[in-house]
Amino acid sequence: MPRLLHTGQVMVDLVMSLDQLPATGGDVLANAASFEVGAGFNVMAAARRNGLPVVYLGRHGNGRFGDLARQTMAAEGVEIALDRDGEKDTGLCVSLTEASAERTFISYIGAEGGVSAQELARVAVRLDDYVYVSGYSLQYPDKAPALLEWLLALPKAVTVVFDPGPLVNSPDAAPMAALLPRIDIWTSNSVESLRFTGAMDIAGSLDRLAGQLADGALLVVRDGPNGCWVSRGGEHQHIPGFKVRAVDSNGAGDAHSGVFLAGLAAGLDAARAARRANAAAALAVSRWGPATSPGTQEVDALLAGG
Image (cartoon, rainbow, N blue to C red; front, side, top):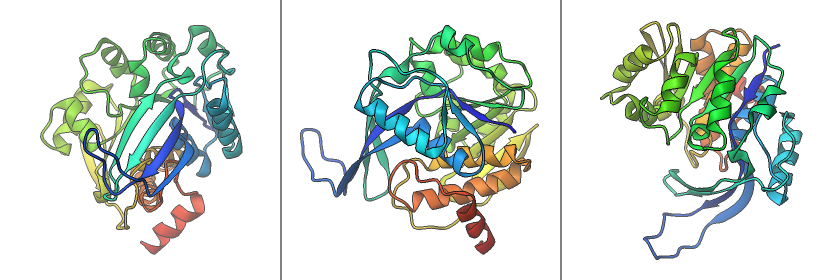
């Protein structure tokens, strides 16, 4: 059975909800706060809860945050491929969610910000695996070179999935230019795709992405409550979303990506996998916290009712 090999970063989120962010130098009281494992874990949890085996290919720290990350991944059934870091702890992200459901992040990178060629060389990759790459990873000088070399040496049959995140703004940087021809699946939100391509609308961004990626690449661009667009070979298809009351958008895109890949791995076509992913994202935004993706039965129930 296919697996999801996640090469991104697992961090611990200090999640706080508040009415709105304070002005610079100001102070506000949060309505709630908790420590939650997040970042790359959100995608992995979504995939795992929907039947796709998952292996984490990132580093994890030597300290209380690393302990929490390992415990949470183990409880979710995520396999951890690399040994713990002997010096650094897992990083921390302060995640601030306003009443509007918009979120703001402040991150401190720890052990997850590095990897070596030797560590990656020990990973046994199967031809039917999905290898997930985060744009965040391309920003870390202790990780990007080894990760890129490893990715570009993978057999072509291995599916490389790329999520640019908010930090990858154009195709011009050297790491991005090297990776573009190897991307088989692009998954992002509309803001990220527009910023990356310089297009004025989603259809235009899909056209430009198709010209930048390898022939036959599958594109998925999320459009919030409107659902998402899937495209391959210049044929764009809109997949409608689901109406829910949003309370926290943190992790919704990750839920979408994880459930979409689980659908593909189960043999669904892109449109059907995207509809399941839209349902998962809708349920995720109706819950507070990062890794709030539903499982298979909840997705099935929303699809049956919609």
